[in-house]
Image: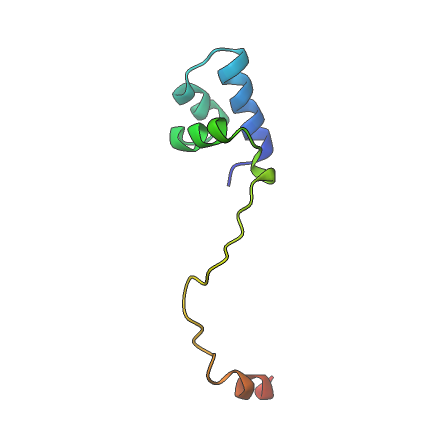
Length: 72
């Protein structure tokens, strides 16, 4: 995961030092596609919303959950 410090360094290297995105990304410790994503969004990683609103897989205990709770 990209930290705020890495994103700030990337922004400084690209905008102030006029470094290419590829080189700045390498110095900041991230891939060029990630660097472009953070430069384009203009937000720090901590300010972005990563919460999912959907389930990624089915709940295998849905039918027997009451029985499982009884064992606990």
